[in-house]
Image (cartoon, rainbow, N blue to C red):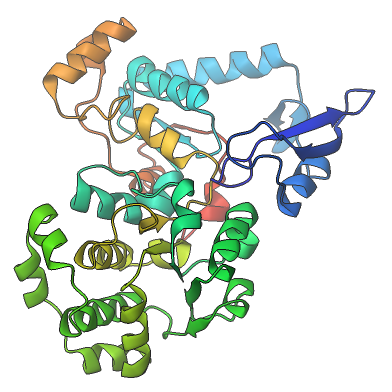
Length: 395
């Protein structure tokens, strides 16, 4: 899988076992039902980039080929030596590219074997904003809509994402629904491939998504688009939220968008609407606030049911599985990290001393890198992630 849509493919290996010669969609797969995307096929058959085909070990400043026994022996010895100084002397960085089973095993080793607090995954870098907003709103970090809701939506609002390129199969469903009497609205400073298809393209100034989302929410309130029955039955804090909203004209000016455009965006939620957002929202210093505002838009307008809701788009194949079972920010199965009873249950299940399990989920991916920079960690094990490429301030 190349993204979080989770398509199923059938592949045919080369006769000599080196590489893949053919890939096609799996007709029996519940997600894509035989559909394919060029990205998934291309990157499977002809992956770009240099591939490591054997273990390498650095000797005299140069990486040189070695055998697996030597590589694993060296790694094991260095980890054991590091752990003698303390559990947090080893850091582990996982990835949304891992399967559920691999993520679970890595978390079990990091938390139950090493006992380190310095464990996280690169999913924190891309999904932390959406996750935090979902938890604040619903108490759980799973998006309420499912793929089955896409065809039933009347309006599709895509905010800070380009699924035509990043999620081609999902985008096909969105485009089909929009073309069948629906509407496609894109909010993005960039004239993306998705924006080129839109019925309405709103172009805020970069970095002003929160101001725009709050302006749209204020307009929905002013224009009587709030589903009062839904709000009273299913939400808390509505009046406080309304009291915190900005002046529409000022917020629109901040976003570089006309008040008329704000009104059009608000009117879009007066239907069965799914709002999708991506890294344009999440990877922002205001990412959590913007995601929460988009969720509040859905709650205020009653768009939390079939064919509607707040739907964050994930880039990696298994961000959700990483959160559910990897012991990253919670113990497997969403067990709270700081709950003593759950810690005891995990220690008993894993057969490790309770004292070895950290009582904190740790400082997070970015702060772990800070600890590396301060020479407070001797060993950092990265799995299917490249922090030198993905981190801000990579030096």
